[in-house]
Image 1 (tube, rainbow, N blue to C red):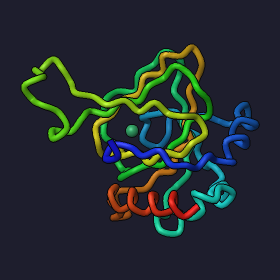
Image 2 (image 1 turned 120 degrees about the vertical axis):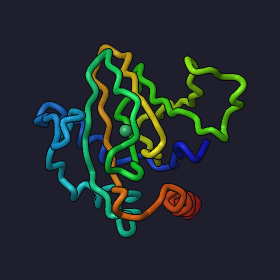
Image 3 (image 1 turned 90 degrees about the horizontal axis):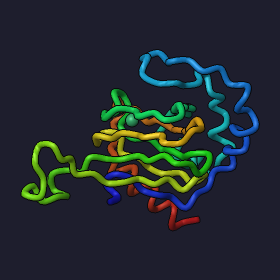
Image 4 (image 1 turned 30 degrees about the vertical axis):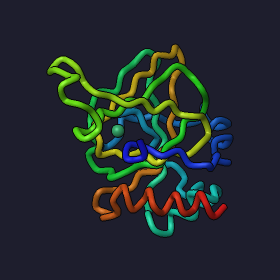
Length: 176
Ligand SMILES: [Fe+2]
């Protein structure tokens, strides 16, 4: 299912920085009013994470920090401006991320219009995942705690497609 997401072998050393500063962040609904996010995340953190530092030379993305309230669903969508993201969650909790499977990945006769073919992304905390933001997806935070997401966002306007990013990240995975 690598066309939906890809788990890297890299755990991020900047997780602890976010955990230690959790109480200090100021949350806003963001410029596009679609989610809770921290504005002005320190972009120098990219260079404290060896994996992000390496990909940043090519991808030139932006580091962001999002939160999802307890018992909430972020509705089905494709990202408006992001081509792909590199994501991680801080800790294990009862939350799921679900992609809608692409036409070629299911047998249409098995479905009808009230059924949606899906595939699950069950994040392992602290590991970076490449995330295909242009495939329809939704998030359920079924936990009674806030769910936090560190996300490195690469814009559609960067003209780097998901499969190019996947190839590059797989090579880095092998190298280290
Ligand atoms: Fe999204």
